[in-house]
Image 1: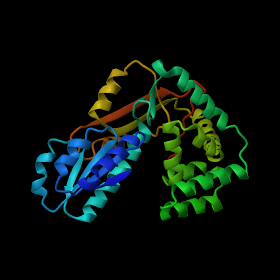
Image 2 (image 1 turned 120 degrees about the vertical axis):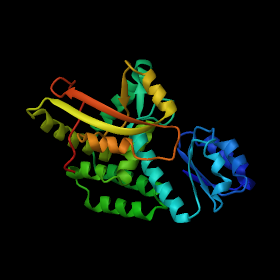
Image 3 (image 1 turned 45 degrees about the vertical axis):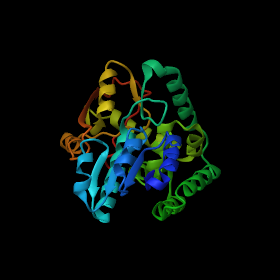
Image 4 (image 1 turned 90 degrees about the horizontal axis):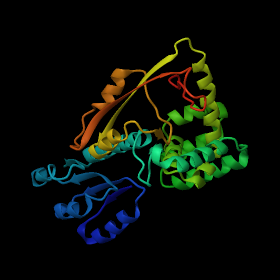
Amino acid sequence: MILSFSSLILMNALNILSLSKKKKIFLITSEPKTSEILAQTSSLPQIDSVFIFGRKKDQYEQLLSKCSKITGIYAQIDDLWQSIKEQVNFVNRQIQAFSFFDRREKSTKDLSKESPEFLWFQLFHYTVTRIPRNQQAKEEMIHMCKYYYRRNEKEIQFIEEFKKEYQPKDAIFWYTNQCFVYKLINKVLRTEDIGFLYVFRFYIGDLFESLRQEHEKMLSLEDNILHVYRGMKLENEEFERLKENQGKLISPNGYLSASRNKPMAVHFATKPTNRSNIVCVLFQIQCDIKEIDKSIEFADIAEY
């Protein structure tokens, strides 16, 4: 969610923020009372990033050291728009990959404390992938996607293409395409929304089966040891919670992507950012693919 407002509607905006506990919110302000607005909003956990739009950059420079959520001060609308797009992509990737259980949107869990809830949701996910997938299930999914993206013409075009062209063998392709399928599937898995998970049963079942087939191919490889890397940027608080969870069970709620290319992962982790509260992190994952529990499935989807 992106909000832009003046002080005249500040109270209404604050009410919106307090109700949007499951959303990441970008705050854009060009109001002369920017300092006042930030004082009342920047500490809210829903506020992910703050963008200041104004031609007098010197007027706001002192705020950079006071609010770590400020991504920058922009005098040109094109620069502001580009920064917003980059931050949206960054947040989507971070949320999908790794965050922490806080009874809100999440993609990892401390299973030592939350085992019953985790196992229940995983069982439901397992069951959904085995429900027969028919035309009615497809139509339910298409209808929901069109409603969700009813004001986004680009995504509507992708949805229409999916409706006409999709085949079960294309499930991984559509996921890696990072269009509406990728975005909504990850959102459903992060939020553990059972209702939406059921709506997506048509596609999730195909994706599960495609990944299973690719997983079988990996098990036939002669090289048993798998090395993959994941480069990320974590907020200081997230990084500290990660360190606190050493030795505990943490599971990705969605599909965790990684790369065999370590330099690429390092590049992503160290990509410059204006945020002062960010820690660059490189995850190095090593496992013996022949020794991993058979219920844990992983696949090489580089060809897609």
